[in-house]
Image (cartoon, rainbow over all chains, first blue to last red; front, side, top):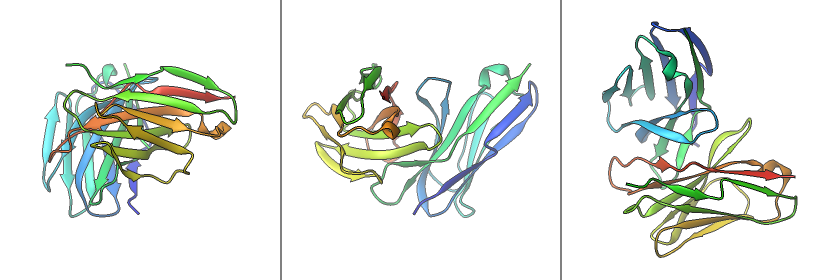
Length: 111
Length: 113
């Protein structure tokens, strides 16, 4: 059974600081996704990572994938308040399954 | 381009009733996924439909069912509602091409009293 673990689950940080969210998964997967969810809203797609060593960047967010370690990271650079949200990683298994999500990281960025 | 749409936005039912939730995928997407986001349980995969067929389902009882129509829209039916079925139900669509992303709709908030 595919398991996805995120840490930390809760993160409070100040504007201007850097931080990393970690996502570990338990079995081989060919795709890893990062989503953002604002309170009361749906999920917004941020990144899809398809291969070992993949790195994608959008603004202050950068995601990377190490398939050998079964680890993805979401790095936040010089955080700003607008990035406050819950961030989910999700993995699609080798079979014909839906996505398996981590529990989410609730990120609060304080001015 | 229109995104994934869901209706209704909110639905209030009583225990034992049936609920029907609807989803329209992004134009050109043939796959529709349903997820449940319940408080304390996180996001869980419910069902996957592609080309009108149920392709896979998550660890949910048979009273959760659905279908996909020829225009690729989908319906999720929940029979014999229980209090713990109260959750946000999210629909996502994708093209199922390599590297595809699942794009999520705004969700239906189901409350069971």
